[in-house]
Amino acid sequence: MPERRWHDDEETGRHLRPYAITGGRTRHSRHNFSLITLVAARSVDEHGPGHLEPESVQILELCRDRAVAIAEIAAHLDLPVSVVKILCGDLLHAALILVQAPPGKEDQPSVEIIEKVIDGIRRL
Image 1: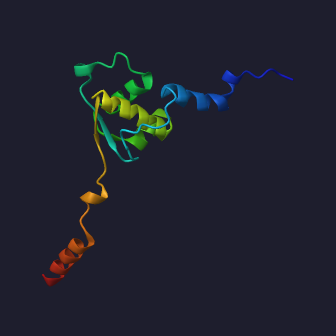
Image 2: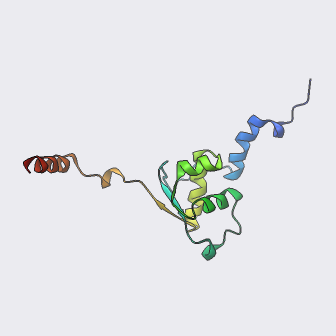
Image 3: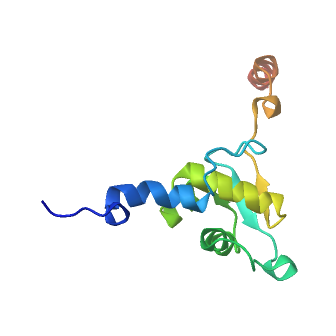
């Protein structure tokens, strides 16, 4: 029977890599990023990404010229969304990125206001 080495097993590697990137963290409780939260890098010259993980540096580079959604970052880096959320939380905490959350329910007009607008348009 051939010897199997756990660290060469592709299936195991896919699970260990995200764990290692996040330092074992599975949740970042301070920030509640959605898939469409936009991320933009602040000026790297101001802060210098000297001590960051390579994946964090990649996020900064990807978001340097335009805001990019969390889901798009995950796709570009071939990382699970949960890992990208944790890394973006770290970058936000270090003031290296700016984020724009999607509008929440409190930002949406009420049904009554929408009905009044529709009624007003009909009267025109």
